[in-house]
Image 1 (tube, rainbow, N blue to C red):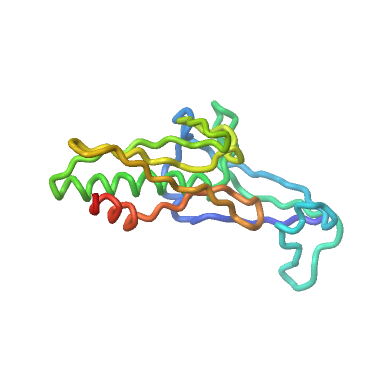
Image 2 (cartoon, rainbow, N blue to C red):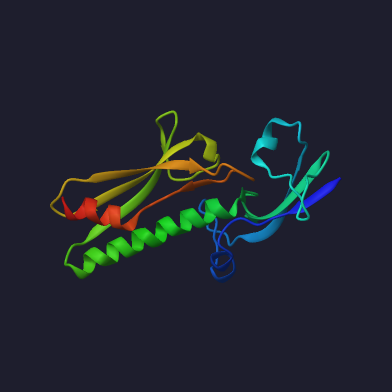
Length: 176
């Protein structure tokens, strides 16, 4: 069997941040995940079977990459997914700070909108999520909701992620 080690995600954010499970707040550890893929499998289209020396692996290949692991929930979280959730929290904190410096106090709460229309504060299966919803409250103003659709990488482990733009969020709140 062939072996292919790879890494996805910002290595500096992975190494120099402390990472916590978003469901139970337990500190995450890093473990290996192994996926065996044959070139004939349906999921083979998401993997690169080329060898470092040129050519392609023949037969089944074991793709090995690192993931975050929660010992309490037994949740395995792809680096890209965890980092995107952490980045959302960082952007929210910066936006709140931005408006506080300008004399406006806003509160931003997160909730997840599922494909069936229900809302949840925790995620157990990312494939069932349609949007991350930011509920924005400010004294004397109507509550706003900002939806961020869930996205999915097109290759390797096909991690789910949310892309939040700080500038876009600030402009939304400035105009209202």
